[in-house]
Length: 308
Length: 317
Image (tube, rainbow over all chains, first blue to last red; front, side, top):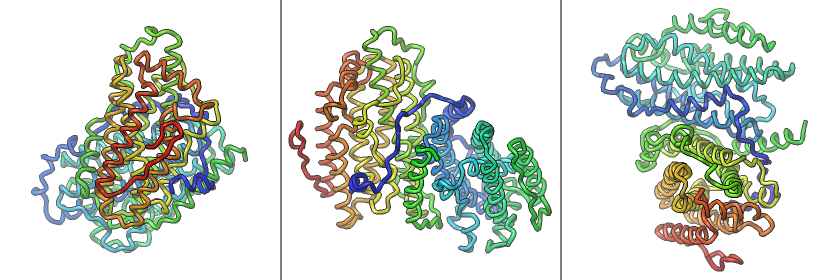
């Protein structure tokens, strides 16, 4: 059974050789090296004894449980979906630096998922699903696995949308709000996640900068389309923050408000005011960053953010 | 479109078609431990991380102690080993995606464990590459179609094949192939004399031991619940891998077709003679027989009977 499909040609064989293993992108290789020296364990590297859930009100705890549960679902996407990118690097025989680094990224995202789940649990309860099932569509997937396996979807577009746009906004919000996490266990977790994510984003920008000289007009269009899709169909559907969902979706008021209440309690999360401040800045930043590649990110209309 | 691009597009389409056959049900997304032994292995992965660059005393490594023939031989041996490690990057990644596609509510222990495994494989790959380079030069290509074919199987694609039960895949690639690979590494370690090579083999074997333990623990949690079809698939996959892959020389150079063996077999003999990280064919023969016996015995505990395999050189196994 295992070999039958190989024998009958039902599986496509990789062209594996020559198999180069030497670094060809020193900056990306450096990220792989850094990642190896900065491993951590959610079970022991977070001062859980300083969490003290008993010091918070039931409303605050519920909001924080919801916030960290949703973070868990988001991080899980990086276990369930993004690893398809590693397969793509290997199948397309991309440079070894990409392959080596991305193995660490998968591992780190697994760690973030576990850490976020632990945080929800230790705050009292992890929610294994959204309160209303349809919300699962908004918070459940960013669609990267499908894109990674689709040869018609350019790798540059995936990098720009997932690695540069989606992760960048996540981290911008984290950076802008980490000081509000007055709970030291929460703050430490946010710092550790941030430390890893900064490398993930650097990886995306470094690759795109290196590939930029070979961008064709089609590549540029692919990047523009992919980033626009990520903003409109993922961010504005509430994948990261349900408050941003344009349609309102089926999320309950408690779910939508969870980020704010949790943030105000110092337990992680952010407020609508944070989003209104950080999101336009983030768009401005990536527009500027992608402009030298002739990539033009359009303006977006959002009922609460206005024109951004 | 170049031939290489066309080929990679075909490969991606094959994966895409397999992925589309699954309907992922992500929610409810359960994280609580389900199989404590698997969660413990994941915890060990986190606690036992290491870095090929800093946890091996490269400053004590002196390849100049060995003559040119020995260095060239070791370089070849470690290059071939790198090719055999490389598939682990895609296979364990594909298996992780398979677990995620099958269910959000089941298998989180396995998913967390597998989220670490590609990085561990990458570290092993880095060690093999570093040793090959330090002994002389890493060889990126077998340069012989027979060896290239034998060491290139589409097992990552098989991991995403919904027709192949995940238990059958783990039984073949984990319980048999990983077990043989671990036992071979332990044999190389036992016979290695160079302290840096020994350190490298010890670190790799430690991770490999966990990979094998994962396979057995996972099977222990799933096999008792399999129906007759699932049990037959497990036996068939293991038998297939043994007869058509392992006995064709996937792990052991002396089992390769005669015309594909050199210069790799002579290189391994020389590497083994100098204690630089290889075993002799006779030592490997013993490891192979012992591994098959060990796997057969463990499967028998689940009343899974692995059929005997005939091999022209080795007789009945």
